[in-house]
Picture 1 (cartoon, rainbow, N blue to C red):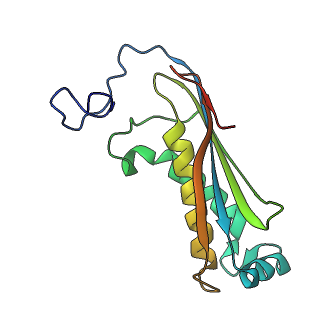
Picture 2 (cartoon, rainbow, N blue to C red; picture 1 turned 135 degrees about the horizontal axis):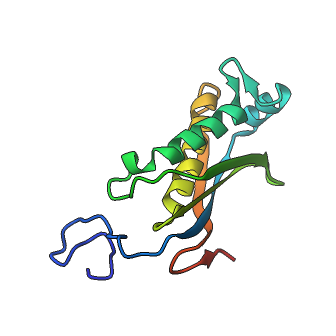
Length: 158
């Protein structure tokens, strides 16, 4: 159990002490992929991804940013941090899947990978919510960290 950072010496949940860490520029990129049934995809493309509720991608971008900003309220042991930047990109890939990329950055003592992952997740859930009236056969099939930098260990998915 001592390898898990969110456990104290007694094995109880604990927030990680970042008091002695160095402030560095930190960045993380996360991705979510959504598979839509053909009828939903066609309906969205027909109306340029706009619904009666508004532009699906625009609303998902706003929701993703809001989610990233509230990460510490959703994930119990995350440090509350202010983001220097949060950017979401949403597009269709060659497989007609919606791909969401969330990039979060901050100059701080702790990283922003949970904020990037939360931003991508909330954006994906928002797209699900806006499209579920057409079908519940929507699959959020992947939420993954693509890269992180600026902390003790940099990471890049290959």
